[in-house]
Image (cartoon, rainbow, N blue to C red; front, side, top):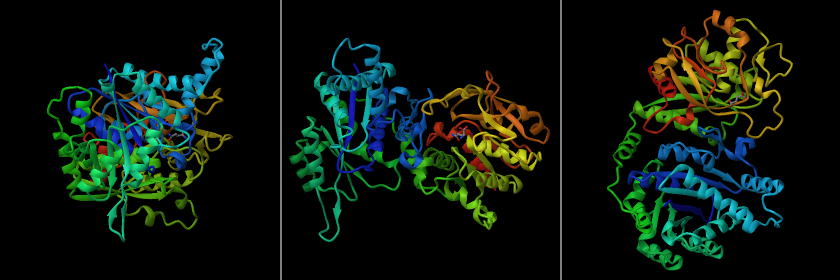
Length: 533
Ligand code: GLN
């Protein structure tokens, strides 16, 4: 019988609901249970794939090719389990599947209503996650804040879900803010009280309250929250601000949140296996040196747009007890005629060009790549970063001056990056990229092989354009090595430059598979090369 943990949020967004949900999952996994995670996003987009990173930060891609909320990246990094298409449910996804069924005639003459049709569809998505994952415990986080119009039907579905299951099968965890008022120097519980009232208005009584606060709550504050929230004092879990997010599961563990949950579920509890996580926290808190790496993108004012890349760099740093300091470089700043590239990039020991879409800032990225290649500075190109490296090499080494990508110049005479053949007939933008896991065969005696130590790998993709194989021989003759290719389609997956200290780029997104205690091989060797530099 699968058990369900629902994590809701009150007062305001940004309290760390995703980290709370991930920490709970991690702690339950550490007790030996198989866990699975799911995020409900109350917007009407079917998935975040069509949203600008300015709206929504990075789009995280699961192995099965689902474009999802960036919180799923936190989930995977914390629980180290592969999630899938049942892990991110949006209002858009729910409504479109109900409307599709209605058009098909599945409802046999009924009037389609929010309750029960939409609410049933949402409940089905929760049951489906439980069934398809075979998990003992599913942790579902509801995006947004209690009281939002958008999430009201999701909350209604949770209320119904609790009612149709034995009480010990579901538990509600509510995260809230306990602000500290300077001047009167006190913590305030009213926002928490009000958000619990709001939750009850929707028919849900929380079982656990997780309080975000800058300082310890103290007994009297806890008693007050317990009294007004009608929950035992032990079920108030403090989420005090921390410098290092990896400490949060350990702080929750000290307050025995997993035991409270397992007791409620009437499940036994073995001792927790958390040594690996404690070691990680120790490592992160005791980094000995620092390396500066330039990340050249067009949304650098918004670090969330590159969240997984940022995390993957940090993970690789942990392995070498080194803090990776990211120099966020706006690619457009490199395009200005008077831009001093050396000054902007000079102090960085490695240069990374991440994924991206559209032509804005492209020439700046090409310049950054050129600077890395000509100055023997370690380079890692990811997706667009590989395409940019190909264009740079074609233009400046092979002399194909007008080399470009069909994405930036439709009429381009030398499209070294071109639209994939199966993309030519695609009209809809949403969900139609080359997405998720594809095989990549790696050539021996290459940097890629030295990194992966394997001839066949699988990596996650999210792109529409590809290297144009017509130019392969020409680029190869000038020294570019195609070290990874998809065995079925022949699409280029990895390129590298053996004449360079460390120059490698891939068409896929390695950042999604990096874990805090298991850096991704491409990030590992890139960060190491940058440190050595
Ligand atoms: N815009 C490029 C493409 O669609 C690269 C995509 C990416 O970097 N994720 O192929």
